[in-house]
Image (cartoon, rainbow, N blue to C red; front, side):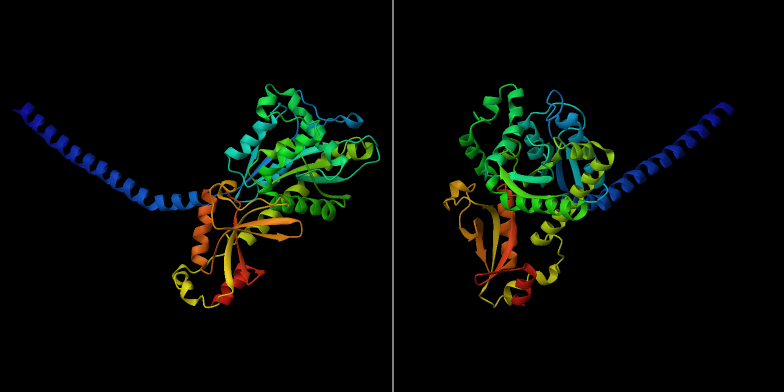
Amino acid sequence: MIILRMHQNFLSYSLILNFFNRDKFFLAVVVLILCLFYYAPVQAYQEKEKPFIVILDAGHGGHDWGNRGSGYIEKKIALNIVLKIGIDLEKFPGIKVIYTRKKDVFVELIQRANIANKADADLFISVHCDAFTSPKAFGAGTFVLGLHANDRNFKVAQKENAVIFLEDNYEQNYDGFDPNDPESVISLILMQETYLDQSISAASTIQTSFKSNLKRKDRTVKQAGFVVLKYTYMPSVLVETGFLTNPREGAYLNSSKGQTSMANAISRAIINYKNKRAASVQDNVVFDLSNETKLPQKEHNSNIVFKIQFAAGKKRMKLKSYNFKGLNNLSLQKTGKMYRYFYQETSSYVSAKEYLNEVKLKGYSSAFLVAFDGEKKITISEALSLLE
């Protein structure tokens, strides 16, 4: 009898424990579900906030030493500067840095571009050191892809492009491109024409930073046919930080102080470019969504139109859909020597933003809104003010 009662008491106790354990399990499940409901929208919102992605490309590497003017080694100096730029940029929220190499390894030019394209980057910066026959040449310069204006620009590109001869299957990788043939350079240009305007803007910002922050000689922004820039689908700049063949400048670039100064100047310029681009695209302007649907009713000024600028370049292209990834309703505007290409035209700001999304889905990730009052280009803010 005593054993039976003990057994009955044990069963009762076990049932109570099971009941409470079951309750705890259900309570845990409910808490988990509530957490998912609470944090999922926050996570989704964070995923929408795409960071500004910068590709930092240290020229040369591995068995490709680059130039060795005055006994200094280009591949080491370029890598040191790039790593310091990355440290500077990573301090800023909203910026993501990706390196084509972080150590002394050989990376094919086509692979450097592939890294940038796969990351859907916003800016590609390739860092190098220059060389010249005269030891008197000095100063930092920036290059974007384009037809070389003179023999000097061609020789700079020729020197940097010669690295493809160190690669296996370079003829297949680069469609038969010959760095020693000036005519071959022409084939490089068309793909980057889309981003030329913004590449020049980024290069100019870097050049200005060299001049104002470091008092370096202003060698201005130049165009030349660099293979490493051709295959990138984003604004791209090649930076020649100085001449190793100039003993004084070579010593400066080889020093920790010189490398830090150059890195700081470049990283400042990248931040400035990012801010300027954000301002022009108007991505960071916050509008009251409750009033946004009322905008079409206020649009009584028939002179105000919005367009989407998605490409720019010095070469005029026929406004055919096959030239622009299937886009129709195209127009262009010539400013100086530049042709700017636009998609659609509307007096509705809401419709314009929808068209902008369409263009970006087509692959023109750097496209942005522009506004016109008749033939005069105005800011988006001015356009919205005139529509009220």
